[in-house]
Amino acid sequence: MTTKRFPYSAFLRGPSEVLPTLDSADVILERRDDENLILMRAERFEAGTASLRIAARALAIVARRNAGLAEEVLAEELPWLTWLPDTERQECVRELLAHLMAGADTGELLPFARALTSWRSTAVIWSDPQLARDLHGPFPGDGPDVPRPLDAS
Image (tube, rainbow, N blue to C red; front, side):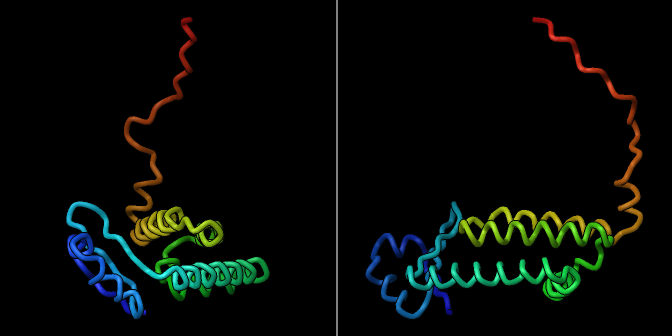
């Protein structure tokens, strides 16, 4: 599906100039001081949501039956997975699939996007052995545990 871009102000001035575009494309309304908005026909939105739900569930079934294959499939799309140690790679795949399943079911995909960004950052750290060692500590200033203060009330 193609997308067309319009300034948000053009939509506010004359929606009748923008709305006919929805027959053949989704519309991105570009705003200067805030996030852009997307307009699309409900039928296309629902088709995308249903497709995502089916794909997420299918991938989750593959992961349950053959974790190695699921990891291989995700690594094809997310090549940075190779930088993660084996145990973290498995945890990453499980967590991303869980967020994807929940997001596909609820329509809320931001937790998946945040987890994806977090795992990608973790993989980048693992790609630099010295940085990974440095971040494991010990850190200067680490000291003994301090007991919790007594309640003064």
